[in-house]
Image (cartoon, rainbow over all chains, first blue to last red; front, side):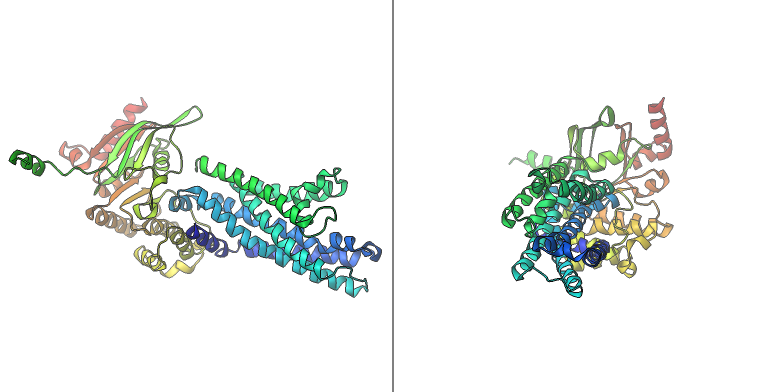
Length: 246
Length: 252
């Protein structure tokens, strides 16, 4: 298992895929946080909760999104390029390969979450300070944002590996993750709320994990998100160990 | 033990377990039969050509043998076990199924190092196999820049990492230049002389004829013949005649 984990970490750092994902993530965060921070009227940031969800929390969301993509690509990329064959020849007990990908992606994914949130917090604070808007977050809020973003991104990376292992095809997996997080959760669930249910969708749980939902404790949100991750990994594990490889 | 028993044991060849044993192997995809009731085995120290028309079931058989696909019925064993149950598969079996199973953005060396890490094989061995297939110089380059022949050799290097006793190659000479084919032939011969076993699938009969001791010919998933090449030449037949006759009869 350690052997497979080391192999997976080498695979992840020996292509430019993750660097590309990191650059795209940082670009989007800069764009979105700056746009919101500079363009929205100051009264939109009057309350602490507005500052959290409208500005600072964007880091967590993009961290989770790109960690999920990183996890998904770690396995769909192997099917796309055919490296899954040598991988499974070297480690025919495929469950070990899935487990190694989950741990490697969670490790790198959590770093993505941390970086995303740090950048969002830094840029958001700078934007508000530049406009003379009082920042209503305290040190505890920042710490929770960072810890929650790292945890959410790690768990979303596991979701990505699980989905990728179950679907195998890269484009539908990546598109599916983007559509779910950005479109379905971002536009519909987030605003409509779906009563109390919207709070328990996996994207919303990531927000709650970083302290953005006053009605859901961050610790509980992490546990619930971990259940989603476990379900996705179980689905991916079952598919990978049973289905033939072309 | 009596004198006659001793005589009996010395005249009989020592019993050797087959390295590859395929028995009643069947694989169906929905209603389509890819491999049907296929049975043959390979002894150590032999180089075997695995022949058959396109779609005969060669690649499917190799995938079943290597645990990438599960048989519908029957079994395919290497060293007496299912591939997935081998303790240290990379040190027992080396295989190349496709000529381009690489991430184009990863260097040849990193590709091998990742495989070596997964199989607990040293970094020094990676450099050794790179030297062996003459890829040491371009090893730091991204595989996307490699020619087909270089990719073939990189795939072979991956199969050789664990210094395995059984080598399974699907169309290995495809894209190799004449010097590369010559090198491959000599390499496989040395491996077999040391007691290693080789199974090569190919379409190019002339190439196979120079590399192998025996051929297994299949069509439509069924075994047509398993025969030693010197047996064929002893009967005054060529591999091509035998192959064409058998596959034509099957087709009619």
